[in-house]
Length: 90
Length: 396
Ligand SMILES: Cc1cc2nc3c(=O)[nH]c(=O)nc-3n(C[C@H](O)[C@H](O)[C@H](O)COP(=O)(O)OP(=O)(O)OC[C@H]3O[C@@H](n4cnc5c(N)ncnc54)[C@H](O)[C@@H]3O)c2cc1C
Image (cartoon, rainbow over all chains, first blue to last red; front, side, top):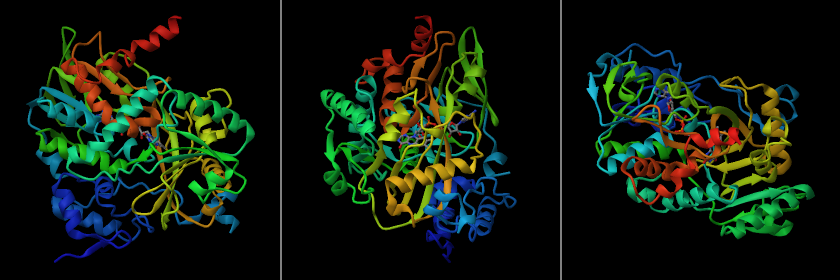
């Protein structure tokens, strides 16, 4: 049965399985191919699920998600606030 | 260990090995396969996973200097007209035009000359007054004094571009091995005999270094030195918003940062703004020589944000969800090196597209095909893209 893995970008389990079968094996490649983890939460919700899907399809251990580096800003921030010198100013 | 690691690769051979699967390597693999060559393409990461997924999406003509640079860009831009049909899939190509915003009288002087030279060179570009500029890009600040506009500027989704070339190449028989790092070039009697990879040796007589900003490390194995430096760029990515940008938007400070080596703004800041089909804004950017340092000091982020809000105040209340760091492959004159080595037969370099690799991706596949096969429609460019052009310069 199909289900949603990445809610922000509405990426289905079947999209991810298809990408893995097409040779996109790492977290980063799957993100670039399917947009899973590219949305507003930046993978905070789906990262662990995605790791488990990769592990189960490739029948390997759960990857350590080295592919998706945590990125600044850690949380969404208004451009105007960033211009002022960051979230602290809020 | 992934399933690919477990399987390893057989000791194998190919007529041509392309190292690097960014927008450049994938375009090369596709054109070579199309011309009947047997090609293997390897990448230490994934398809388009390095510079080609940490960049803007603009195919700008009006930012190019008239001459060779412009001619290459124009020819490549025209190839985009039929590319989706050739690849059998969308790369989100749009000929939506491009605007360069001008905010100071000094920039106006520079841009007047720039636009004049481009018009002379046959580029369809015009200078807009303040009212026309605001009509073209309503989000521009009220104190903008004008803009230049070209309907021929275009945009593409770079992720789809390398994936599209790779999928089409695969269909033509190209074997693609990701997570496979080149760790040496095997040679004998001044000729390439193979590529040593993290998963075994591929024997071949022809190897193409399409490693973009990382090309110098392959050059080191090959014993053929060259100097491509990484020029770091940072882009801020916003949440999804309704379409607010018409085509691509730059500001004159960006053009200045790109072309004037003397008076660089701090961190090489200049505005670049584009919007993806999904609605995210790409807000750039910077140009710095800091090696391959991915750690971006927050001052750079503040500077990009500050400048963007100044030129486009409408961005002030838009939320940024992440930043992107990429390394432009810098050769020194803004043009790539597409050349075979004199010292090592069978070793070909195709890298160094700096900030124009997306724009020049289509033509680069054809350039390398024509270099290997001889003749062909793009061969007239090749004498200008050799690596010894830099030697001549230092001799003079
Ligand atoms: C911030 C920024 C904005 C930009 N904006 C634009 C724009 O709007 N328009 C435009 O035209 N261009 C733009 N560019 C430039 C463009 O992104 C680059 O010129 C282009 O992506 C370079 O492509 P490439 O294939 O040569 O390099 P890459 O995409 O870096 O590909 C090289 C590949 O080689 C692989 N590799 C490296 N070493 C090895 C090894 N030892 N073994 C195996 N594989 C290896 C890497 O994993 C990588 O996938 C921008 C660049 C930046 C940084």
